[in-house]
Length: 548
Image 1 (cartoon, helix red, strand yellow):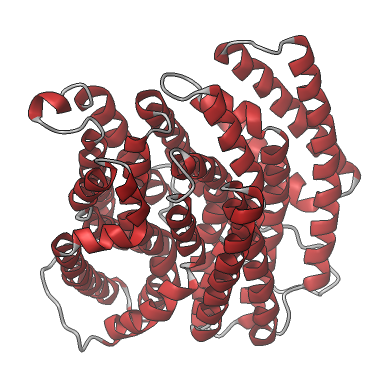
Image 2: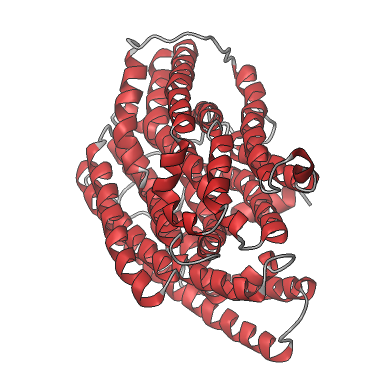
């Protein structure tokens, strides 16, 4: 346990429906702690992407890497931010609450060993059938000499990352269930550190060893998977966990988790499958399209990680604990608070990405082999992807809520419906507006996914404080629109006065625009009496006073 990690959030007493109900301080603090760790990882992720852009730009090598990376990364996203939350955390929390730590540790060991067996088999099959697997995802790369073959090599090297990240995700789930949020939130930062270091140290050395320079990035990802486990295991040991190489498929907790993992994978898979579909379709849109979409997606995913993942990670153990005690009113209150907190952060983030897409892409990526044309293409994709911040932040919170209630079928069906909608939209939009249509189709599908989940969740919970959520959404939309108008005007003025400034000055000026925008947002939120913004500002103020 690290000194900065909080104990379990206090449970508030029941109250009347008319009483003001801002987000609980415990939830905000926990989400803030996850957010700090996630922010460290996302900032390093931006440095990682900057490194990619510097060394490889939007070239054939980068396209090949992003396709190879997408295959194991699909599983990483599902395990780390999907299946573990949907299936493992509620079951582990129930075991912890009703039977104690020793029984919970036994369940954790059973899961880790089951994951080693399952993912090990998948990795072995992937390595054996790597050529047809790669052809399935990137058959159009065969038209460019050497591009398909490079994708095959990269995929083969990166497949073992799947087993490593599955183990890391199990460690993350156990620590989150114990309300130890910071260490698992910061563990992906170690992945980024390893990738960045591999790029700067080994890219120049790869040709001497007979490899393409891009292979250094693939080796860095595998090393980063090891690092993600290494940083979490000491915290687990301090809590009392000891690894045991045992596997009992008759363990009822393990059987429950494995039973939920199928529907859990489908329920949490919409975003990842949609991005994979985008990657496949983009391989036929010419050199650079895969890279532009991936660079834009990774920018868009920063606020999803900071908002959706952080809030959901903090809220899920609380909802699971109350669900284990059959306390549905507290589950409903926790979900409503988390959803409102998510909206007051995700809506302004979406507006900010739309308004500042071009300067953000230029500021982060445009250097080395990344050209101004690449910046414009990435910015177009980012504008189209931006609504995903709202859609998938909500999905990230809503899907695990079904599993805390023991309901697995509905979110899986909704997820697959969203994938079908995304594919249909993409096939039309890519022909109408080009590669950025793939991002737009994904954004529309994400909002539809969230809306359907929200509607279906009302019945088992007896409502979700819909009027209060709608009021919060309406108010924050108005406040974010005011912010967007001011920031857009400031950015247009900046472009008219300093049209061609270097990245250092651009960073300073865009940073100033963001600060002004946040000030306008806070003022508008105060005028509209958005309680969730006030709570966030109070928690930020406390942290600043604690760490002057």
